[in-house]
Length: 441
Ligand code: SF4
Image (tube, rainbow, N blue to C red; front, side):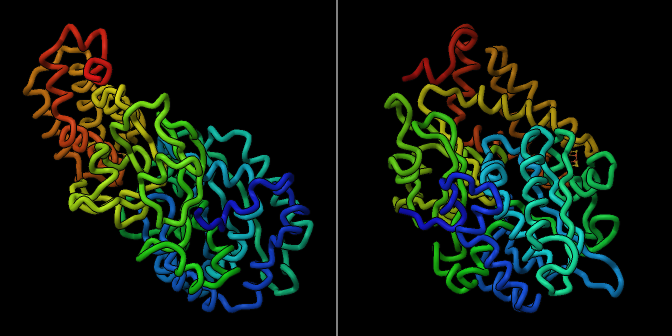
């Protein structure tokens, strides 16, 4: 059984409210942290090995150490709660059921970074959660954990919740900052990075909800103890939102030492494939990471078991990228059609492209149209090569990672499931009435 750090109290009735959270030991990590110096907290976060839980997996302590500290210029912490990646819903769970864990994490992090005004930028579609967060903020303020002179330390902190307008691209940190400033959410060219010029050109750290929540147990048990959980550079615990053709979709906290096979088939987690079907493929880290066929998902190319951690998931035979991604674990059974699935994702990225860069704006539209054609049985063999060519021309040639995120699923689908694309081309009539999966199993 995986160790629980973030969700250990999630089952307790009323844990959403300050009184219950406090009774369970809530805010003791903040009390401890406020007696430490900001540098001591930073050292704990570095020692923990915590990697950003939003998708990129960049070491959090290192990111914090890049924050510029010019004299007299305010600094900000912005929590990225714009969780819009298809298949990813772990941050929603944290905010909905454990809002004080996030607020406590923000208090510790803001104190460490020197931010007196911090923000939570939340996905617009999570329409009921800002009220939960704002209620928690008011409770924390009434108890003296937010506002002026917190616990008599002289440290002041205000937290504001900003609702997004529903654009996926605002999950990209610089687009998020633009949106927070009241502008259209277009990603910025980097450099300068937010750590130097972020919100209103002030030094800013943008971190994912889960990353900031994880700071609480790090301070609680120390960075060194946190680093002992997990394996290698995959330290601590990770929230995984599991969905698709499984018996038990939901949010699970894992300690990154379990195998992918155990995660999918054990009753503690996904509980196996629905209706006893066969596992066909999986997208292990949210829709932006490449799809993986079952054989490569469960075993490495050397036949070793594959583990649910950053290194193991990225190892051998996959396209580049942090395969753990955002932790959105999408399972596909034998009945699913990879072409249809890839087309759905292409439509999503085309719709969500902000339109600033030609390869992304035009390329995502092309990919969607070609995939639609193939899926309907109207494609030619050359279309598969054209699709391959277009995704290659998008990857690495855009301002923000949305371009890569749109290209990788297409590349992986063709690389691992080319036979399905060819089947649609060779069987135009059949592909209009049934999908590849149903026709072959
Ligand atoms: Fe906009 Fe796409 Fe360019 Fe990102 S890659 S800036 S979403 S056009």
